[in-house]
Image 1 (cartoon, rainbow, N blue to C red):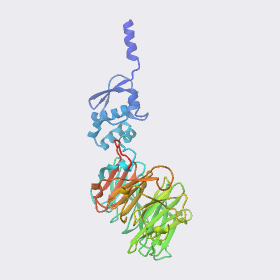
Image 2 (tube, one colour):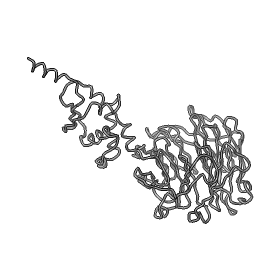
Image 3 (cartoon, rainbow, N blue to C red):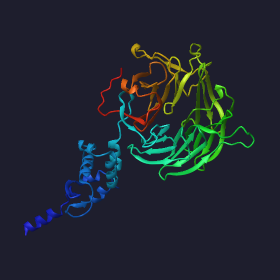
Image 4 (cartoon, one colour):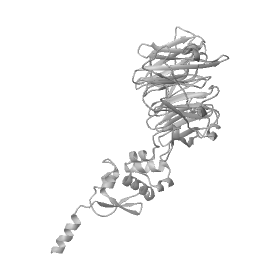
Length: 462
C-alpha cells in the first residue's frame, strides 16, 4: 500500500520538464524555457497542456532545434547558418516568438568606423536604382528602379514589386507602413502606391487657375511628419513651391512657399527635412554652373509659411570661405545640428539649429595630416544618422563620429569606412540609414549596398 501511494504521488507531482515531438523528432526541455517565448506564444500555451505524453507539432525539427537553442541562451547557435533569415522568421512566427528571432538576427548598433558591406539589394528588373528610402525603425527599404517600386522587409527579404504608371521615379518616401509617395523628373505630380496590395492610391498636382505658368509641376523632394507630407514642386516655367499635404485626406492643406525665376536663391529645394522637436521644415538647394556651386538653406514654419532663418552661398559666412559654397547639406534631426561639405576645400562644417545667426558654421578640422582631404569635393554627398555624419566623396565613404557633447572643433573625429576596392565601385550618389544599417547607391552601378557593423569588431579610433 505504501508503495502504491508513493508511486501515485510521484506521478502527480509537478515537473519542470516537458517533451515535444516536432516532425517526428523528440525534444526534452523545461517549461520555463518554453514560457520564455512570452505569454502569447504557442510554446507557452503548450507548456500548460496536461499529460506526460510528448506533444506533437507538425513542423521542421531542424529549425525548431535552432529556435529552442535561442530560447535557452538568447542567441542563435552556429547551426542557424544553414537556414535563411526568412526561414527562421517564418518558423518563429508560427511559434509566436518572432520578436525573439528579430532581435537575434538584427545587426548590432551601427558604428561607421567598423561597418562593411554585407550584401547588395538588387531588383530583378531595372537593376539601376534611381532612388530609395529606408525606414529608421527597422531598416526595411523601398527602392525605385525605372518605373517600379520594390519593397524589402527588415530581413531585406523581397516582399513585393509594384509597377507604376511612371517612366522613371527620382524621389521616393515611405509615408505609411505600406504606402510610398513617389515623384518623377519626367512626369508631373506626387503619386501614392500601396506596395502590400500592389495598388495605385492617388495623385496630387500643384495647380493654380489664376497663373498659367503653373503646369506640369514635377516633384523634386519629399519629407513627412506624423500628420503632413511635404513635397517640393518645380514647373518648366521656373516656378516652384512646397506643398503641405494632409495625410488623413491626401488633400493639399497649404502652400508653404512659392518662388519664381532662375536665380540660385530661388531654385526648387532638392532636399527637405522635418524637425519634430521644433515643428520646422528645412529645405536646401544646390546648383552647379560655370562659376561653381551656389545654393541656399531655409527654415520655414509650416503653419504660416514664414521663413524662420535662411542663408545663401557663396556670399555669406566668413570672408575666407567666400566662393567655397556647400556641395551638400544634411540635418541631424536628433542632435538639432546641420552639416555642410564645402565644394572646393572639402571641409566639413556644423551649425547648431538652436543658435542660428548670420554665420552659424563651425568648421571641423582634421588634425591628422595623413587623413586630410586634398582636392575638390564636387561629387560629395552627406547623410546624418545615429549621431554620425557619413560623407561620400566620389567613390569613397567616410564617417565623422561625435566624441562628446556640444558643437565645435575637436568634437568630431574622421575615419574611413570603406577599403580601396570599395571606393573603386563608382561615384556615391545617395547615402541613407535605416535601423542599424547604412544603404549606399552609386552612379551607373546596379543595386544598393548594405553596410552593417560587426559584433566581433575590434575597431580602434585613429
